[in-house]
Image (cartoon, rainbow, N blue to C red; front, side, top):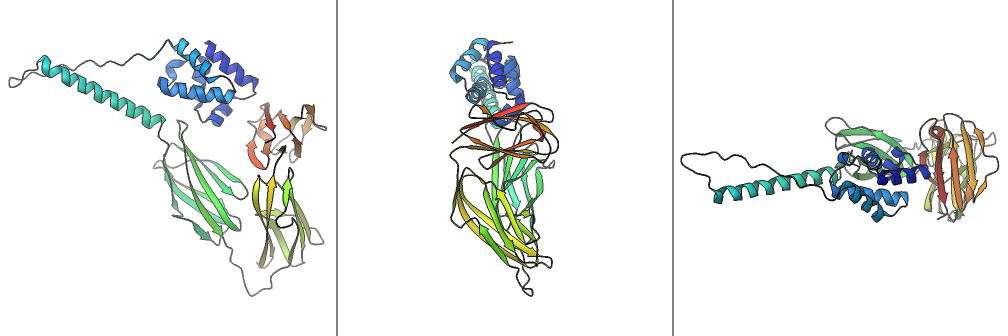
Length: 388
């Protein structure tokens, strides 16, 4: 294996990053990263694009990009050989004779046209982002239903991801039809919902489009509204390095309570409490209470969330997982053991490292941002986080 490939692969493995994970993080196709690490330079695109990929990958691995490019140039043996084109044999007609004065300009012009065509092909395949268009709704919309079917059109070979906020709901790996059309049902929460459609094409280029859909549920006026009292959080409060506790009580007519669309368990005395993690910045909390007959009331609180440390939340979903966590260089108490499905752990410090023996059932959130599962089922994976 080439020295360049050894250096890249060893650095990636020391970081505990798999090749598919590196491809997803850098937006570089996995087969190109594999070619770089194995020295298979024939499978790579043009030198200009390969050097760009290599610099991005070197930054991702925290190694010197110029040193890696120098290794690549030395191992590749300099620049790529220029393509040559054999001139076409001229057709001789009695009425016209090809002389050198006529043939040379024709060959030069043909070479220029072929070169321009080659450059255009490279550009369209590696530099142009995919097209994505949302056709329904055609603009920002209002809905009375808690679900909305978003439709659009993009590249047939694109991979679509839909994100809905607030709540950071994510719908992954939506596949368009052969003609590029797609449709996906998105859940809505009361109030404004920001729906973002992202498309990733096979060459690693990303495009996105978004819509704002406001959910205003229909409320019956012939029934008395239920009583809802939100005791926490205080409107305008600031929360640092911790989840936000939403608590209060309702009267006996209330059947369900939800916080930003997430159902909350009601006690026999009508009290409720839920800890919610938010990303940094201003946040809006909507608490809704609904009776069995459909009467509904809402309360809204606006707060501010800040992080001065690394706050990592670990959720075990779909199976057991062995978890070892270190906080500021010391093993976190109670870890280094197997946790059952449904367990939630939170670690706070300047530097937090989480190692899982079953990455497919281990889901992470960092400073309120959902990062999804750590990897595949049975895979041993480690992730590290540091304070802002």
